[in-house]
Amino acid sequence: MRKSKVAIIGSGNIGTDLMYKIERSEYLEMSVMVGIDPNSEGLKRAKERGYETIDTGIEGLLEKTELADIVFDATTAKAHAGHSELLNGIGKKVIDLTPAAIGPFVVPTANIKEHLDASNVNMITCGGQATIPIIHAINQVSQVEYAEIVATVSSKSAGPGTRANIDEFTRTTSRAIEKIGGAQKGKAIIILNPADPPIIMRDTIHALVEEGKEAGIIASINKVVQLVQEYVPGYRMRGNPVFDGRKVSVFIEVEGAGDFFPPYSGNLDIMTAAAAKVANEIAKKQSTFV
Amino acid sequence: MKRDLHILDVTLRDGSHSMKHAFTEEQVRQVAKGLDQAGVEYFEVSHGDGLGGSSLQYGLSNVNELKLIEAAAEEAKRAKISVLLLPGIGIQEDLENAVKAGAKMVRVATHVTEADVAKQHIQLGRHLGLKTVGFLMMAHMAPVEKLVEQAKLFESYGAEMIYVTDSAGALLPHEVKERIQALKQSISVDIGFHGHNNLSLAMANTMAAVEAGATYIDGSLRCLGAGSGNTQTEVMVAVFDRLNYKTGVDLYPIMDVANHVVAKFMPRPQEITGSSLIMGYSGVYSSFLLFTEDAAKKFGVDERDILVELGRMRAVGGQEDLIYDVARELANRKHSVI
Figure 1 (cartoon, rainbow over the protein chains, first blue to last red):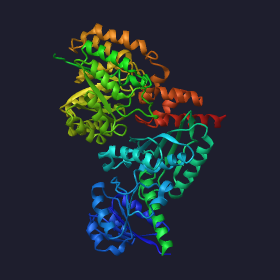
Figure 2 (tube, rainbow over the protein chains, first blue to last red):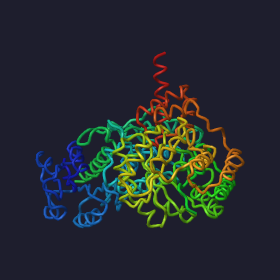
Figure 3 (tube, helix red, strand yellow):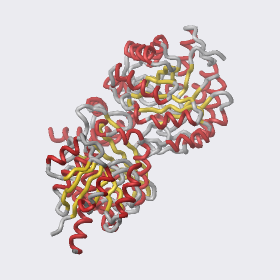
């Protein structure tokens, strides 16, 4: 079996955590970590684990194109547009963990099969990855007139990028709730909680659905929770879905795998885990073609 | 008119919680007209959780808040309309729309430790020419130094005023004084205070804030606000008149709008009930009140136990979904003991 070689651009926290998840992916081979700061912790860790490292950013990677088939971009939305164009230009697949959203939104349990050949896919937001599987699962059984999600994350796990542009989270997640989740209208709310010790990421999904489909909705949700658990083992429902007339509420908790991030940062973990899952599926398809 | 103190009435925003976000346009018009005629300088109109707050999580607005803002703006001849915006719930477009509807002031609200999510919204407020305020909620949850640090952040983004917001009605007068004094020494913009009456201290806290240097103070008519409500606007007018402060608000007209307009549509008196007392006592966000009552009924547990547990978990504003979860856990524990 031929594994796909992986490059990660952005040797910060997300990139570093992602590296550990790539190591566990069946069809992926961690190859090179790309940063712009030679002293970055992420580059050091990658080197220690025996991977190539490049500290001259995208230019450095473009000089060694043989090192990667699939490239994850964990930098910034601003940088991503340029990266994507250069990488697609030389035939590399790009998985975008920034809010740039150039390529189609992907949620592994919802629409991964449609985008295995896309040159660029976008991972939406942490709140999106945690909640859209549920909305999509409900939508398999009932029309979803409206869906709303509330993501509560510990203050410590919300980085400066998220904080400086919190509306981007709200807008992007709302859009993906409609586009991928299938809700006619979507809304997203994010709450930061500074409690110490930090709280585990929690997500609540409220949706307006057709009445009389409770059993089907519950079965569909249970099924998707198991599917998400395949790539995020700490993803679980708290209690059963609660029905109140047309409204259904689902309570989720996301505990991270504790690779590089502490386990409470389920929000960061689900992003890297979902991205690794998408790349693994792309690589799997490529390996079966060869 | 020269005012020593600026009274900001929040009946049409904080009161939205008590009304389960069901203000009618007519109610808003009548209150707005009354506040304006009594000489109130600013009053706030928004969903209780701020612009964009209409949701299954907090309650859907019966009437679109933009329509209510527009109606209030039509009634207000002299008074200016404020809106509340909580980054994470509302977005910049909501503020732009509110300005089109007639808003002249924005209060950008964050949890007391999270001011840095509000930079863009403060900057937008200034850009749109609004009186722009940083509103630090749940002020009892952080040490004074932290509050000062966060207020400085707001000031650095361009906020023209910083509010100390006692969202849980948990602060005692000496704690209010300590906080306002610390801000007075560290920032150069105006300081405001927003209280809740869960421990029957809203008026006393407001006085302490004013004595320590706050010049903007919030109130609601007949205490129509979350939990046991806010400092009672008409009482505040009387008290500060006795203390020889000029508020610019006339006592009889403000009493009239409280008693002849607001009292007529209040769903229930804003008493300090067992639950709201516990909110003040254990430091829980006041708008959790009605949700806690519902959850307690549904799961057959004591409201106070839910609230104490929420306080212990250090829940912050906006976590209404947690109430349900806590009530269920408490019910499970109760059954497993039996």
